[in-house]
Image (tube, rainbow, N blue to C red; front, side):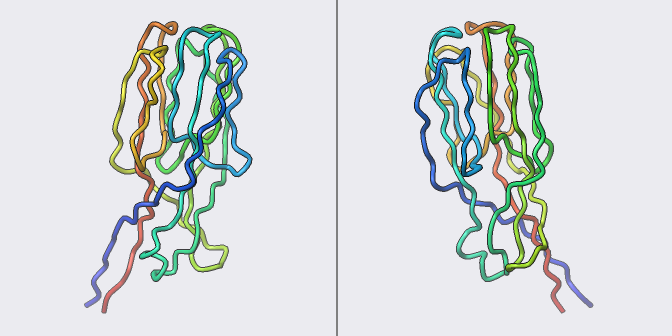
Length: 183
């Protein structure tokens, strides 16, 4: 009789970089190396500054023996929302990779959301990853504190009102569901 074993291999967050501040009313946070958003902070109103942290995901070294070689970010989509009524939540296994905003709280915010995959060996076989252990953090939008959870990716953000109202961020680990069959 064969035994099926399923384990979740949590991807590691590495190469964290902090952006230079940008005026929120004309901000465009994207990363040429296609890292994901790991954290965000904002001070003041739409004329205040916003910073983000980007990070890469990698296969844990001990999991490379299973044949998992690298992480692939692909299949992206853009979501546009009115900032003062925004609620953006990624689907299972997606992460936020970019954020643009124009104007005040009545302006438009665009999020680029992408699916995460793990590659098996150096083949073209990709395993869709999943988000696990989601957690939320809430702050006053304008308070100037980084919203982040170490090792977790930003997978959601909701905000109603202006900079004096609260913003809630959702963070999660991204994991590879790995199935093995034992004889």
